[in-house]
Length: 375
Ligand SMILES: *Cc1c(COP(=O)(O)O)cnc(C)c1O
Image (cartoon, rainbow, N blue to C red):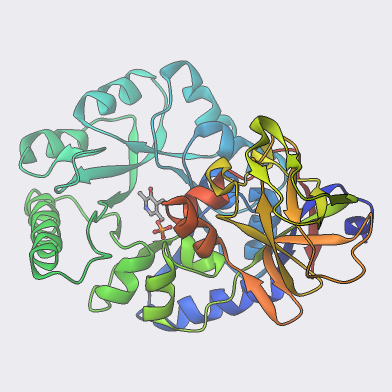
């Protein structure tokens, strides 16, 4: 296994991915297909590796953020529909046709730019129902109807995005309902004008849990497929047995004694009060561990035991306290995210320590990490 020689690597447990696919499919109403969200290199996991596994499990609809993310998937033989969720510069429209990618119409003005390309482009129209990021405003129905009249736009889908569907608060629930009402109103106006509805989608992971009553053609699922939710609390609250797909591991490079009174690392930010054993780990903030986990905020697992981070995390390395762990030696494996014997560190835990969400931790994993696919 390649993992035996790498400096630092990601392990992808495809068994767990298949398990998550099954769970998410079981939650979707009949006729609603999973549209897997693969943006940002599949939330750091590796878009090609993940897409291949999804393809072989019958998933044939994907979303990415950028046109080049779509091109990468096609160049690696990924089949099915690929929808670009974000902005594509007009000089790159030729890539949409060359690689059979579907572009989001991000507003009325952009629809004209797409039409001006002069050849047919397959698109999904985005409606802004309250998030105010992308999409034509749901109250601008005349503009939305005009988008349906452009002759070079082949409209395959229409969608919106819910921005507080993760929340239980009544005000947020009301807001979500308002977004859904705005969207349905647009849909009804489109039909009244005699256009047949293209494929419709609205939910992402949280929408499936919190608005399971909704039934559309696709659900755009990201984080749940990867085996968690945005926070530790949510992952525990929804407790539907998702299993993390990704683990991150690195090596012990040196083990040495730090004598009482000595300090370690840049800024000499941690000083030993008594003699201790410390290990350097081949993993730094360039690999994706947030630097704010320095000086004891974060830890790694070695031989199933916690080794707290001591001193400041460096770009390529960090030092950990292994005083309490027996027989740690050069070349040993340190778990940054994942299981080590009976203990585990999750991306949600690291996110909590860093004051962010799991998706930020995952999507920022470093480019130089190798990947090991566990079939
Ligand atoms: C990222 C994204 C998703 C997926 O969201 P998850 O919460 O990860 O399931 C769905 N739709 C859009 C428009 C997105 O940007």
